[in-house]
Image (cartoon, rainbow, N blue to C red):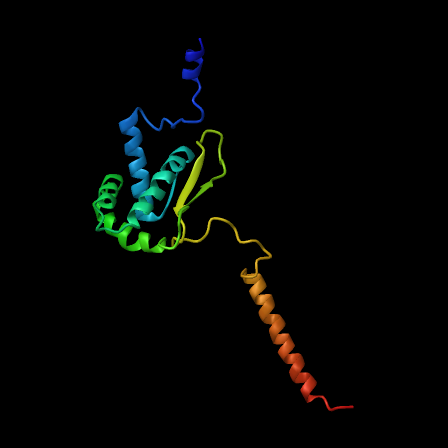
Length: 170
């Protein structure tokens, strides 16, 4: 009886079923990782993005070893289905993350817009050329309103200094 109960307990070691079986699951993950390398930001279901994040970060870890490493080339050849992206992985993405030791991806959950849609998410590599998905807070020093107010304040102070110099001493 105890043995049968132990077989039912997974202890959190579970993979999502992304398709019909293991080959289809791997093909879906390979497509997501390839799209991420090509575009550096993709939108897909949360389950696919969450599963692919691990493999995308491992791919960068191997790419940091260099394109002369046989293991790194074998991993890149397996996970990237479009072979014209392999140089981009080794020449663009790996040097970008050379000083990082992990967490190369960000995963954002998108808000649900209708009742019949799946849980959607955005997976992106850090340092990509696209604008940030998180809104800049209004009190952020680099927001356009704060930059304009700061410039106006500096102009006003300069004007006041000039006016003080022009006034005769009493």
